[in-house]
Image (cartoon, rainbow, N blue to C red; front, side, top):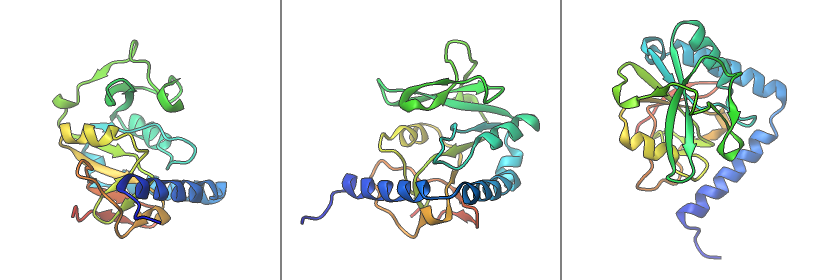
Length: 198
């Protein structure tokens, strides 16, 4: 059997960790999500941010809905992405609730771009971007879902970034490509890791 290429190596890790998440009990996931929530709201970069850019979590991801609700409650503005399958880009729109969203691309909840206020990320100053991922490593590199939406976004906009994952999703090192953009911090239910960005 030949050596797997980068894409195949990433796909194998993505599948392995997706299966690990599927096997989590509801109690284990709920407890882990709660610990991660407590960690992110204690971060200095979260506290000082006026705007939080974050994705809407799926059932297999660390819960971001509680983070969104808390952020709105304490007076921060929250913007979530709408993906464009045509040009593989993300545009963010402000939301006031997680209950007013619609099913978008990849069956992910999104705001309605026609009725929501556009978030001009290039004009933001004090903001934090919460980045999704299935696997992270100590250098801040991540394996997402293979489309590269966030890598393209993060190449365009320089900002403080944090990745959320479970402890078993954090590895010492993972395969990375030349277009992969590492995050600054990784939060698990057990620790906060400042990436070495190697």
